[in-house]
Image (cartoon, rainbow, N blue to C red; front, side, top):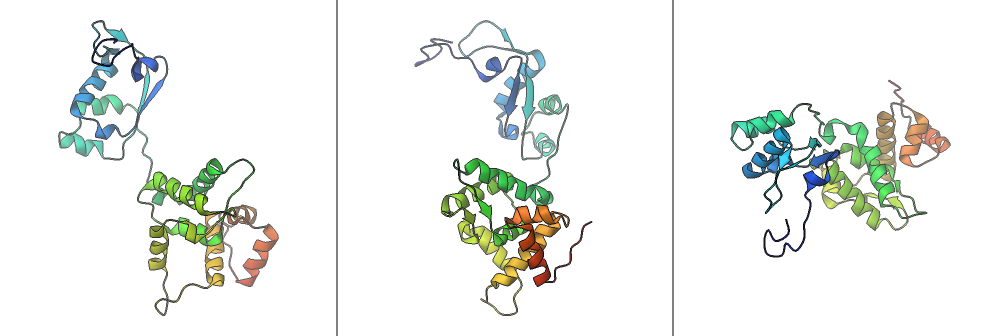
Length: 237
């Protein structure tokens, strides 16, 4: 309310008041303090609240979506999260597996972030080597880490083609450690990288040639030629 504290020169409506008859999204709810949790529980149970410095009760009717990356039940057992709030929020739960367990989402998400980053009239293409790196990486930071990696790559790719050197260093180092070599310090040849990227794209697309060609950023005829060149077997399961 106006005059509630020094600098409160006018009335300001809070998020729950603004979201009346709509939806409010509470991200990282597991990090909320116990004091905040108590106030949230009151709003969820009664639909009532008071503005800071206010005396009258106001009502709000909102749909609440909450997200967290921690195990809330473990937090409840450790007395870090209120059990009553847990069950109030958990009327319907949706578990989203980590990105490493839904690899079919990696390339579509990467393409989405590239399109969102690109300026009008400009397009980005993932090189075959980058496709291989993205599919092989474990993504401990999930979608946020992927978005950050793509943002960096897009900023460095002046000609529009995303190459391994445009990716964050830890991604390239991780791939290098996973690549078996008979001799140390001998890099993969371009042919080896290209073959591996084609195999990864074909596996991702379940043997669908047009889709794999689109993912790789090459024409279907070119893809067919390279499949024959490297004697790659296509599994269409």
